[in-house]
Image (tube, rainbow, N blue to C red; front, side):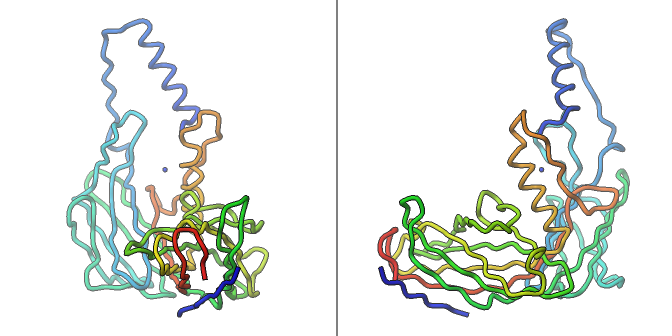
Length: 302
């Protein structure tokens, strides 16, 4: 088989179980009595969600935290005072645009700068969070071969990059395929023993530089040829250099979602870097390299 590669530049806690038991017990003794439990607003917290990068504008989203007694409706905060600082200097005071969103207009973050967000309103405790956009790490090369895994035709990709020395680095590798006029994420997987976990059911690979700090590294990944639906299939590989805070949040969020519906799994606490609140203010930069494959529907690929 010939192969040619064209390379272009938030489960149930013990507290929750006790609550369920008490509800069931109350139901046994009184089927008609309605118990109205009011959770004071002062016990709630501001939830901040904002992921920033150097090549796009910022949006800060604010909502109220939820208890096990709340319904599924998220309560957004549209009356907050929000401020954004760059290296300690106030650069923006974004205005609410509805749905808890505070877009930062006319401003784009910069790699290597540290950003801080503060938010407050009249009823909830003020919050703050900060993070720094890491430098992007270039993908040096991508080599591919056609192979089979357990009888399934697949593509193996060797993705090489050079990790900076002397600092902790955190990476998330993702891939998107443009084929037949559509673009969609690729389900990628690997046998690399150094990866820490998959992001969002194998749509990304999470890895830190513990074992290859300061060295070149080749990450071997695979994906099925059945991802190809057209004659020409372009796969865009994105190596995201993420901050430690964003990495820990993504890792814990993924593991929490994986175990959240399993009564017999140990619950995973979702990481947050928001002081006096919840959520994530994270940062990343990205480098991208594309590979074009010629083939169709999982058949021969050149």
